[in-house]
Length: 208
Image 1: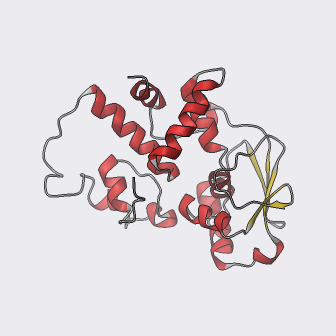
Image 2: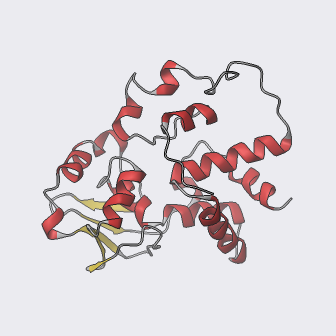
């Protein structure tokens, strides 16, 4: 499936939730959900038929869009979660949260996950002192994620760090703003991950 390149605010409207795909804009009255909370398109305000399948599909689509993944990427992460011990839904969320692009976003180096992914792709980020250009790289407890020395004065990074207080840093991460460095204190648990998604419905969808 081709990568979506249209306006991301339509995705939030389609799911009826703020997915925080546009960084600080999502916190203002300019957010599309605040202005038009119904799905986009000619029939957006019509009554929608619902079924178990459609509800499960919408939960999967929300989760994919929050983390900016295509179907093949998301399916691969789900299959990895399914092979691991424990509750599949909880493991799925943990694997998604431990992706490097998400950690860069959570630490406040990027205003959105899309921007964080771009920072990783362009070689601005390091894990344990080594440059990593794979947004899907998984971090472990004890790892350090930092901005390369020559990239620390970039305006997008400085702007995102200035706005991070309004979003907050998760408990499982620790940020040193002066050094532009974050530490993975522990792997995230279900209690640490607050998302408008019912992950169990995603598991049920893939188990059909």
